[in-house]
Length: 295
Ligand SMILES: C[C@H](c1ccccc1)n1cc(-c2ncnc(N)c2C#N)cn1
Image 1: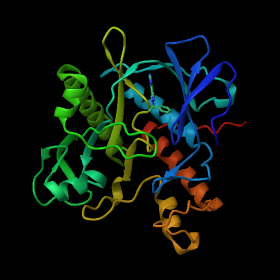
Image 2 (image 1 turned 45 degrees about the horizontal axis):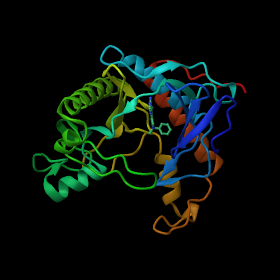
Image 3 (image 1 turned 135 degrees about the vertical axis):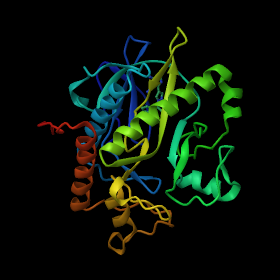
């Protein structure tokens, strides 16, 4: 699903999963469009997951509301072109803070690798004996650089953020990151989902206020784990991507993850079960029914 042409909008950027447009004649608005693309093992798969863009857009909008008493956000309107209805949001164009603001409540992935090497994450020392999936004594602000497409973000310490954006803004985005994560983790936990970590992006308005932007607390910007299967000491199952990961890693796919070959198309059954996991995550978190659009 490549970025669709949208009359009245100029396409300005494509991420792995989402596309960015600018409304013609406007310099203070952007249109963020979520596709049905899914990534696994650092590949964007050829097979879309129907409704994924709509489900994650609805989830992000719901999270913006849950966090609105803590911080302003960039959402302007969901009055968007019919071609992308339900999976696009008109937002304020902000001066984006040039770091990925990551909060970790659990140790896994690159954080675990850094801990095993140095006993710390982003320069923050941690106690001995932590394992893959361990809950951290307290959530950590573990920022990274914003790497170019296809490159990997690099972990940086808080001093780096201060150097790049100044002490006041660095403190502000750290505080907001940890407040938003704590709120999100508590809400998700009550509903059977562990938010192990998440990435926020902030921007700054002309008046200097710091605004929550991008997508928020979705399975694309966060690790979603089923709470009832949490077991430190092993890789945790992904709430949303485990069917895809397991199939791609199975002999049935015929794919060699260590090769340079792109992953094969997904079978219909894997697509449907994955779609249902996104619907389940949305419905568990919000308490609402996801209304599939009749196109
Ligand atoms: C990385 C992310 C992205 C989103 C969607 C598709 C591809 C990339 N992005 C967000 C902005 C951005 N810039 C100015 N103001 C804003 N409110 C936002 C937002 N959100 C620039 N890039």
